[in-house]
Length: 248
Ligand code: GLP
Image (cartoon, rainbow, N blue to C red; front, top):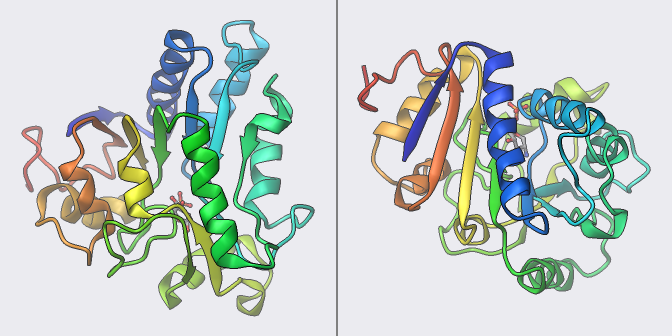
């Protein structure tokens, strides 16, 4: 596990965007696994900026997103599909038919999940997966207690996740209680993983995930078992992890 210490949110965003840009330059037809939430916003901002400046070309890139709320259609402003259009896809030259987000309105959940895994497999697997970190250690929407082997599936969100995501909605009742997410097994199949973390409120869970035991109760701790993981976090998020990668 490689830990990259960034000064602040801006620096973290730039460093993570650099890794993604490098991946695209190294392999122009790469498959990127993408995340949503507040953390990646600055990363997408940078990528769009570099595209506008002619430094980056998304023409042959494929993207697969980690997750989507169940019951929200693509036109819903709270859907992750909408988020991705707004933050990245509409701002770069990516082919819409090469961007994949789980379908929140799928009639047959199991089938939709198998099909999503099929899309990832048909694309040749994920070259670089971007992850954020939930306050309870979730990655994608894999909540504590989730089996490490599981592939794309439908989950019941924990109350803490619903509360954390309440800020994007106008009321608690509007936050969907279920979501589709790539499984931990799906995520671990990526050739490379970059997890971006920012802010003091993530310090405790980041320390637990990086320095604590590998346990399903802390989904992100599974990353300790992956051979190519980079954690890019700012000083605030890394305040409880020493330079040696140990708890401080
Ligand atoms: C959300 C998303 C995750 C994200 C995490 C952290 O629930 N499903 O993919 O990484 O929570 O979000 P944020 O970056 O807003 O703290």
